[in-house]
Length: 212
Image (cartoon, rainbow, N blue to C red):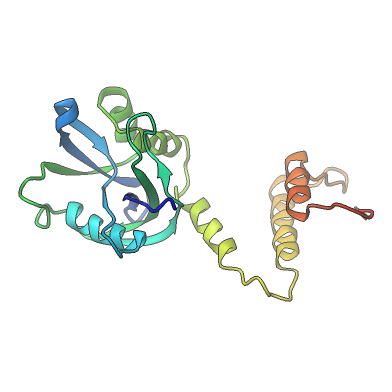
């Protein structure tokens, strides 16, 4: 049973959703300050998401609204069996260190894309944080769009009678056609989409009719 020992919090901040909530914390093993995401231990009997809300408030003073969470993953299997999960969400309020423990040396950082580039170039950064920062600086949209989309798919009831995935597929095709145009009335489904459809449908027998 891979129960999470800890939780890592990827929080998006600001009306424009253009900043990530980071912390700059002194770490004894490296005898220096490192940039990382707010994180903490999951207490016995505590849900990982609940732990995330608590830890965000304690370390940054911000209110955390979770959107999506991951399963726990092992952090450094060559050194330890520590397992942590990610929780993604939005943060609001004003940063403060009023809730931090006396032994903690933490500075709250609200980093936009320009600052994230500088941090990656000039500072010490924890690996889970660095990977997300690299994705963040190369995107222009709300970084949690994908997480929200996945949550919407996850919340679809298994017993729904409507061909919900067919409706979703037709909607996205229509939006794509409007944005890109249809050459001479022709529209080709990208090969990557076809492969994904085959994997989802998992056909094992019979024939497949593609009327398009």
